[in-house]
Image 1 (spheres, helix red, strand yellow):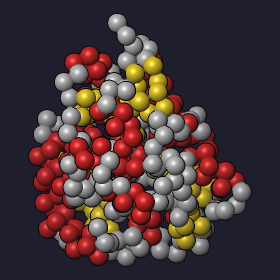
Image 2 (cartoon, rainbow, N blue to C red):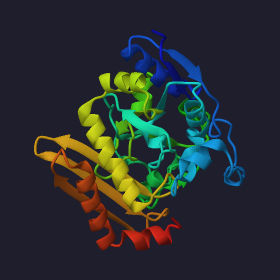
Image 3 (tube, rainbow, N blue to C red):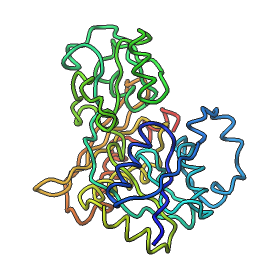
Length: 314
């Protein structure tokens, strides 16, 4: 039987992730695919691309900026050039194109954010410290906790951002712990940020395995390496994001954790400057992740999430 063809972005982190999946499957061919996100395409240019095959089939109401990391990979999947796509789950929009489905989630790594720089806690960070991040979620929560900090936009992959830190472009970075772990660079993190005060992005630390609907061979392969707890957590987080109609340009964090007493979902919604924000938390049955997410969205809306998101321009 022919080996599965795995599609992935060509960044170092993405290829490491795809390699982990290939090994878990007992071997697979890895095909790297350049995406709009990797090419640094401007948002204005991306917005003009309204007639691409994937976007036509996508039917997404809220793809936001995330689609730039998956569009070309999904096109290759739809056209039969690959059998299974491996994505960082936080990059995968909640609405998938017609004909594609989320088939599995391997065991998740630590979803927390990590501080790379001096200090041993956020409280000990020097006033006026320049923190580099392109995430409005991180910006909002950092400024909500420490309005004296200077949060500066810093884009690029993990390696390039670490180089910019070393060059003195910024004083510190906030990065996903999982990315550092996968790259073998977790020793560069000074400390992990408390995931209750710095709520991670939905899907952070998890991988999403996407296939063509009806492909039984790929479905069986994805199912064989799926970690049930990680799948439940990701399902809850994606349902929360979908309910809030949020994307990666929205200051929203969502974290689901399977615990002994059930499923716990925490969420943060704020303005980009951290001036206004809310946090909510719900606990419920492990086997009802979508219903529990819906109840969290309702609580957030009652607390003013829609007004905050409108102020944030979402």
